[in-house]
Length: 315
Image (tube, rainbow, N blue to C red; front, side, top):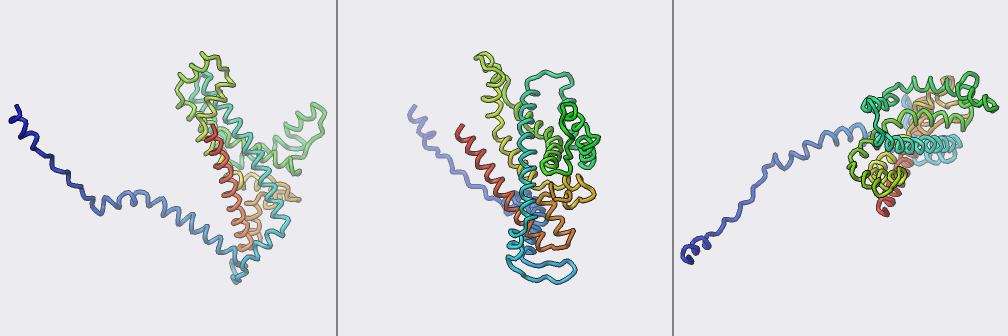
């Protein structure tokens, strides 16, 4: 037996020779992802860097380009219109983002548990506000919030409250724009949350029910923890989109579209940028506003991400 096994034991497996990758195989992954970076570089990075460059000039589109250094930024921080636009932007962002995310979270949890006939049709209907024209949305909401003939003021009159001129007041216009933004994006955010909730095994909720957990406890300890990555995503994207809001305030007051009213009560940073850059052709000053907006978006999005990540780690 030993003599029979000895030849077998003496056989040594030849080491596998490393397969050499060709030049084409090594570069292929970079070729696949290159279109994104090329398009981003042309339409994203280059305009961004050019904006920083133009902000250093007194840039007349049909005249001279005079280098002024940081004078546009110093002028920016001495301009009360800029700080008014910052306050308006932050106010509208908070009033639209917080209710939108909370309502979407509650509706997604409800749709994940309630058995509905034609559930797919009902869920797809949540995208109707998203595909509706912003101009049509503005017209409808302006009529609903109208001082003289609006339905909301009619309801307020039933309880003895005087009519409110939403479009011409600061807080009223902010609420009006926030309502439009919430109505438009709430359904889209709801579908994001619902898709993530449907990935949670149904047995988890059933086991929680057997253990005596009610609907609120299931929502708090099962639904919300399972949605943390999507919540972080929607918070960051809502922050970026909310700080760049432009169309709704532009269409709210057609007679004073660039200022959004006689007292600039709802002029956002993007609207102020458009007014200075394309309304008064002060491209250098408008670029400085764009740089300030870019910094605000990066800082607030980063803060939201860090806070969300910290909550996720603690739990």
